[in-house]
Image 1 (spheres, helix red, strand yellow):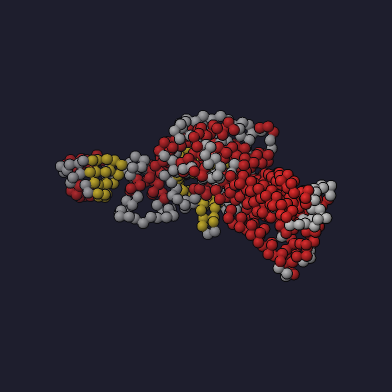
Image 2: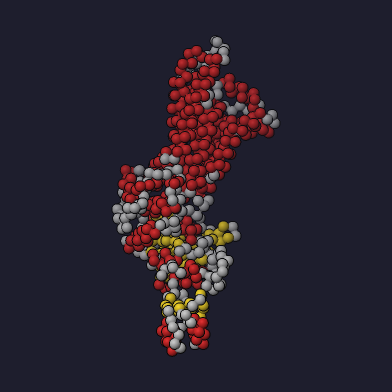
Length: 319
Length: 283
C-alpha cells in the first residue's frame, strides 16, 4: 500500500511533481501511466526515499520509506535498470544487496533463477544488454520478498518473451495480495497488465480509476468502412449527419453512426462494402485525450493530418 | 536466457535477525563484499604494495652505493616509509573510487534504497577502507623489511621499536596511509564524481602542498603547515628530517602526532560535511 499526499517536487522553477495525491492498493496491479517527463520516475524515487519531496508526504505500508527498519522486506524497487556497479557481477551485486538485510545466499540463487539470469550471473554487469539489466533490477527488487513492488518501466528493452514474463510475474505478485505499482509510457502494455490506472501528465494526476473506466471515459467509438465507391458513400453518410474522415483511398472512418446504420444505408443505396468494422475506443484513445494538453514535448507532425496525428501509434497496439 | 520460470515461487527469506548481527554489521558486510568485487580495489592495493616494497629496496640499494657516513647508523623505519609519497597516491585513488564508483555507475541508488539511513553507508565504507588500507600497509612494511634485509647490515640499519621515535615512524606509516585514503574518500563523497575527486585529491597531495611549501610568503607559511599531507606526514619523519622541513617551511613546526591530528581533523571535518550533504541531497 503506497499513499501520497500532496506530493510535490520542484527543481528550481520546474515543477516535476505537482501536488499528487493517490493511493496504490494491494492485490492488484496499478499502472502509472503518463508521457515522458510527466513525473513518474521522480514520484517513484520519492517513494523509496531517494529524492526528498519539496512538499507533501509519501508513505509505504503506513510509514515513510526511511523509517522502515528493513526496507527491502517492505518494498522492492526497480528504478533504474542500471543502478548497478558495471564492474561487479550480477551475483556479487545481489550478494551485497542481500547482505544489507542479512538475507541468505540461497535467496540470491533463487532470484537469479527466477529472473532467468543463471547463465550470466557471474558476468560483469557492464556487458549486460538493457533486457538483462532489467532482469537484474527485478531480481534485486524481489530479493527481500517484499509486500510492495515498484517497477519503473520494467518492460523497457525486454524481448517479447521477457515482456510476457514481466506481465505474468506482476499479475502473479498482485494475486498473492501484494501491492504492485508499475510505470510505463506504453499504453498497450498497461491495457494488458494493469487492473487500475493512475494517469499523470505534467506532474498532476489526470485520472485514477480502473482500466475499464478509463477506457469507457474516452469519447465514442468509430466505424471503419472500406468501399470501392467511398466517395459516394462519404457523401451519403455526411447527409445523414455522421462525421466522416477519409484516411486513405477507399477507406472511411465514421463517427456518430453505428455499423448497422451504415450497412443499411449502403445497402439501400446499392453501394458495395468491403469492410465494416466497429473500432472500440481503446486505452490509447483515452490516454491521448487525457494527456493531450499535458505532454511536455509535442512532436511536429510528419505528413499526417493534425487530428489523426497519433493514429500510427494506435494502430497495432492493444488490438 | 531460456529457462524462465513463468510462475515463480516465493519462499520467505531468512528472518531478519540472522545470527544476532546488528544492522551496522550488515552494512559493513555489504560494503566489504562491494569493496572486494570490483577490480579497481585489487589494482590499487597491488600498486600500493609494489610501490612501497620497490621504493624501499631502491632506497636501500641506492644508499649502499652512495657512500653514507661510515660511522652513522640508519633507521630502518625510514627505509620502510621511503615509498610513502607514491603509495599515498594509490590509496588515494582507492579511497576516491570506493565512493565515486557508486555515483558514476548509478549503484548509489541501489545502495541508498537498501540502507536509507545514509550516514551508515558512509561509516561502513570508511570502516572497510580504513581496515584494509591499514592491513595492506602493515603487510607492505613487513615485505619491505624482508626485501631490504640484504642491505640493512651494510647500512647499519636497525629497527629498534623500543625507541619512541622509531616506534612512532613505524606505527605512523599505516596510520598515515589510512588517513590519506579516508581523506580521498570524503573528498569523493563530497564531489560525487571520479575524475573531479581524483584530480582534486592528487593535485592537492602532489602539487599544491609541495608548491606552497616553497613559497616564502608569510601568509602561505602560516597556512601551509596545516595542509593535510604536510601536517600528517610529520609522523613519518625522524628528528633530522623534521628539522630540515621546518627550515624549508619557515617556522611553525607541528609536533609529529599533532601534525597527524591536524590531518585527522581535516578528515573528520570534511567527513561531517559529506555526511550532512549525503543526508540532504537527492541521490
